[in-house]
Length: 171
Image (tube, rainbow, N blue to C red; front, side, top):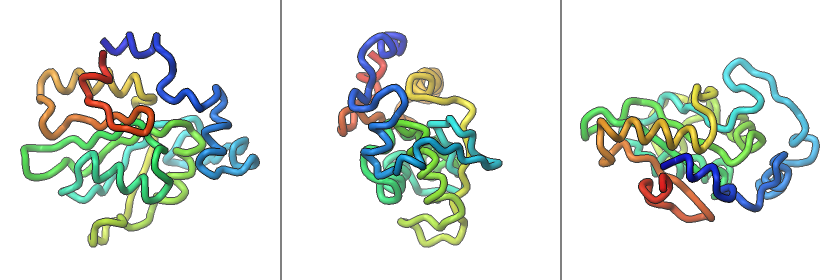
């Protein structure tokens, strides 16, 4: 079960508790690491952000590629894009970043900008998700998958720089 995940070592062993190694790894300066960015759409300690205006053909992998291109590979450990039927997503998705500083950088870099890999004209909208953190997102996804199955709605989980099958992340 997911509770076993929280008892093991953290999924990002190179990150210290304050996220400072995490911040250095992704190019955040010391001043940015300690700052608290206030805005209407993102809480300062958020790690999970909701992306809106998602191109309808985007999958969890496509959303993660957008984030990787904007912020850097390894910035996120979870990506979920819910689908309606088999032809299009529901227009939103979730990314859990490895620390709040990187989530803030992603927000500042991506919010209001166009999607890099889509020619549509709808800008990226981002806000803090109600569910925060990797383990709570895994728990929520597990509940969703009990009814929907894991075909299109299955999230991507990244551990040690590699994609981990969702079922393995739960054990």
